[in-house]
Image (cartoon, rainbow, N blue to C red; front, side, top):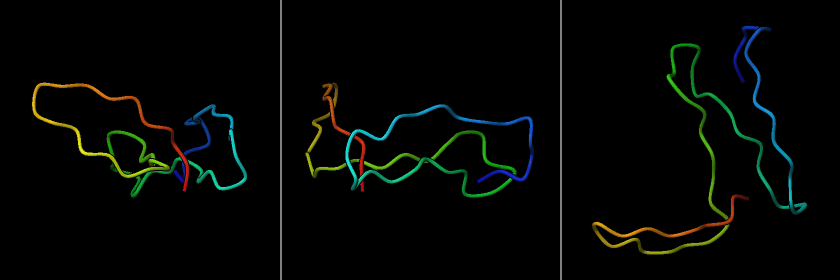
Length: 53
């Protein structure tokens, strides 16, 4: 996670397999999250994926 104490991300793990969001570096613009399932999302479409490990 970020080394900056004023940065935080509130989340709730829905399963024991869930992986915590993280920043890949201090310069990262956003947080990395992980999907619990494999799903193909076609161009110009939307999908809801559950986040977990």
